[in-house]
Amino acid sequence: MQNVEETIQPVLLQVIITKLASKAFAITQHKEISTWKILRENLEGKFCATCTPGYLQLELTMTKFQQGETVREYATKQNKQSKGFNNQRNQDIKQVSCIYCKKFGHTIKVSYKKKNADSRKEIQDNPSTSGNAK
Image (tube, rainbow, N blue to C red; front, side, top):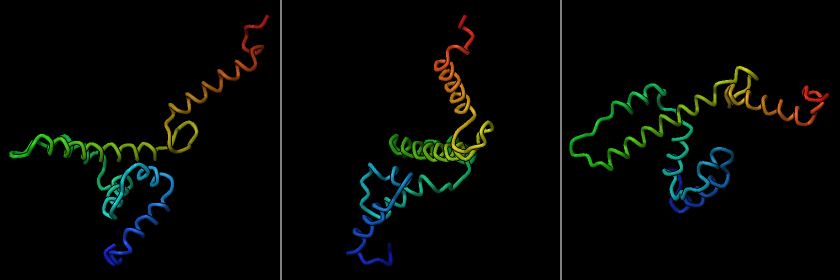
């Protein structure tokens, strides 16, 4: 946005926001975004992995209260670090494929629940094959 005239920046920002779709739209939908910097921070915070989950976990556990730091500053720093760790961990979980159905975005536990629900529905729909009929 540095190369764009200041008078055009708000209009361009609104155009960009209206063109967002899917996850990017969901991230920005209920937030008040008034500058390019805020939009960029929101999107980068969600989609750009800057560190591995292990590094973020280590950084989170090694963060100590600094002399002269207020409790609010320390809590804000801890909260920001934990959000980064959780975002990265959740992103990694979504990328792991299910070993049952070989699809991405869920674990085998979800497949088992769906399989069991389908089996129960089949028994309810066809009670004569459930072994209770005489």
